[in-house]
Image (cartoon, rainbow, N blue to C red; front, side, top):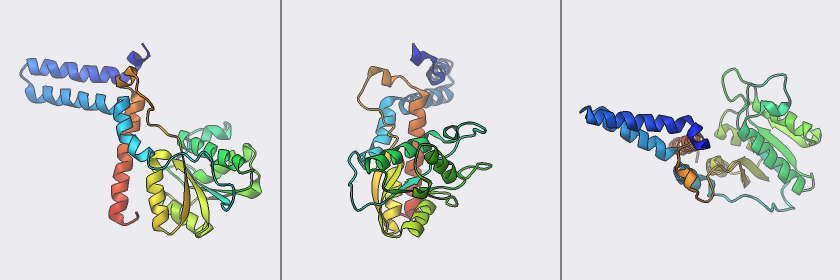
Length: 245
């Protein structure tokens, strides 16, 4: 029953239904367009559709479950957006992807005995917003990371500028690179292009695992994941054209 409450299901059914009606009324072009469009949205909004697009991105670098305990003294975290909250707990100011990256950085930090320094990288991500890195640093402080172990850079606006900022701070020293799993291939490629020494620590995996019949039912969550993957593939093409990877 939960699947039937998702608006995407009704959008697909409406598009296909009107398309069939159009074919019956000899509005063949419109009918075919609506049917094909509805089926395309249904495919992209299904679990297999989202997995097919996100899987190659997220599977490029495995999760870092057992980080090396020596030789790496830095964790670099690429921020992933901020929320619109105000006068609320600092955790309410972080977008979901940013919160996932912060949690992964804290997991690594604790596993390594609280020894590494953490560098948060990211400026203003949207018009009228606030610089992201200082907000994430505040959340890290609130969650117990000592202030002397935290640094941030708040001017970079995209993945390429993030990597430049890391190079300015860390040079060629090895570091754990924390970002969303779907974003990790581009982030790693940029860092390597700039001569950095990142160790991938992906987080926030979104591709559905396993296969359930319910995943065949279109869902807004899966459609969002597919859109996220398509945008990332386009970004990879753009970075390749610009010579950044």
